[in-house]
Image (cartoon, rainbow, N blue to C red):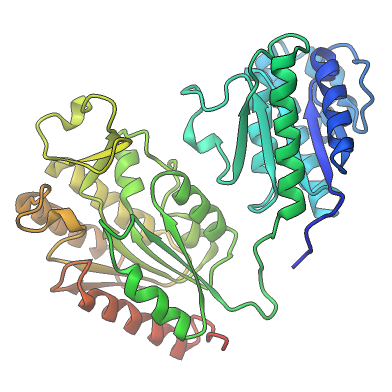
Amino acid sequence: MNAPAASPTILLAGTADTKSDEIAFLQQRLRSLGAQPLTMDVGVLAAGHAPVDIANTEVARAAGTTLQAVIASGDENTAMTLMAQGAAALAAQLHAQGRIDGLLALGGSMGTDLAFDVAAALPLGVPKVVVSTIAYSHLIPPERITPDLIMVLWAGGLFGLNSLCKSALSQAAGAAVGAAQAAEPPRMGGTQRPRVGMTSLGKSCLAYMVRLKPALEARGYEVAVFHTTGMGGRAFEALARAGRFCAVMDFSLQELANHLGGSVVTSGPDRLTGAGASGTPQLVAPGAVDMVDFPAWQPVPALLQGRAVHVHNRLIASATSAPPLRRQIAREIGARLAAAKGPVTLLLPTRGIEQWDQPGEPLHDPEGLAAFLGAMRSAMRGAVGGRTALVELDAHINDEAFCTAALAQFDRWVAEGVVPPGRP
């Protein structure tokens, strides 16, 4: 593991043609905090007066084009998309070379759009700060936000410096430098214990992690549990796709149900594909796929009108999905598991798939559960065989029997050499 940088180098990305004053201010602030700025100009118009280390011509070249071609591309959206490609490629290269310890990007909607691509090019654990006039706006789709992104609202920062925007810029500089100085990147390989990735939805809804985590740790594994409320699933998928887990226990697929149900609480369209793409062994269960989330502070969406609702807190509420949507979710789970390159076992608990679907609970819906189970069995018929298996359990997902079955399959994979043995 690399030690945190005492004097980090921060990649400072911005449009020097329109933001030279702000870039110069940030350069000064970064230096005053003990950091070294490495400035990248992502603008496409006239050169600014702030000194830069990476010219916009280099950024365009990294996108496989020229600055003149970018300018002549026809419109500002096309131009900035090309510059985003080049900036992202350069950022990834700089990090791979060990030349940067973090990212600080600034912009309005155009610069923010570009900054998201640059942030996405850097691995989890690399500090990423974006100071933006649209921070936390509903304009930003969840799939554009990297899991460890820090955003600071650029109050009063549309045009030129003033005391308000200087305050925001200073906070952003401090966040970038402080994060880079304190960062402890995730340990990968070497003498590190093999890592198991697990998904859950909090102990009140899905409780298996309480038993499984200590049991796996006793076997010599590190266990990382991801909260499947959108961004957690994005982080899980990114790491699984990169092969960062020796195996996954992906037992909370509610983000997939949310995505198919049109909920804003989504991790994007690629949920349940990362581990399959990397060939990582997958233990999967359809935890909480009977619910679709929505913001508790908004009206119940039209698709969920008339369905039973559970208000979890003032931020998030859940409604049961109707049988047609549950069948669609089952088909999609089956299709995604069938495409996996590695071994897959789907555990199907037939007595329920989340805490609130049990008798006496607010989301109890035997008809809906039966519809899902039937569709899930049908969807897996074409997938079972070879390296894919379906195991039905006469249990609820929160029962001890579910954990026992999961550990039994995991132990079989270890005995067969599918999963590496744990380290003491």
